[in-house]
Image (cartoon, rainbow, N blue to C red):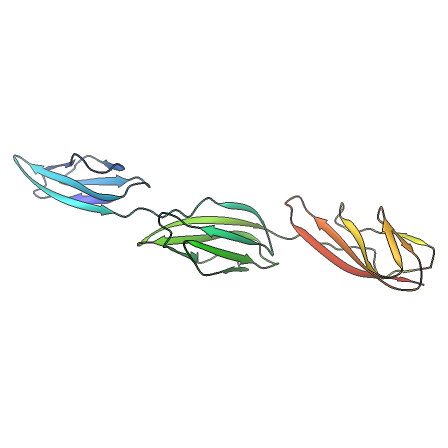
Length: 219
């Protein structure tokens, strides 16, 4: 918005015919009026101050507000997001002060930048797109990676025996990475002596993925 101030203070403000769209002029009180600009406003606007039979004109130049795009959700820690600024594409992205830790913002090219999130990142991050002295802000919500613990591990199993695998995060998938064993329906079957390297892969309700590695032993 802009404040229009005319003297003497007994006059009235009006908008000049032919102004670009997007300006709303309020009433005049003691020579002062406020004009509000829509987010789509752009260009030079002329306003006329009239007192009795005399008038004077002034202009307000409005720079188009850049567009930071829509907010993003469903990003997992350890992932990345693309920031796309428009109107114009010559702006620059910056991270808002006070963001949670764990975000690394790359350089801006053609209005586009990539932000990478560490595996420990979590929370809401705000990023600012600035062009021609004006700015717009968008936010990204980052979900934590699921925590896997309480797995059946470091167990010695005799050749030919089996072991029911369990972890605290239910609904994932067990894999034999290497060693004398095979697994089906979460049951580990031992086929010989040696170290068995295992992995448990789990996706949570947000679609975020963690893998936990551990060992068993065939004897």
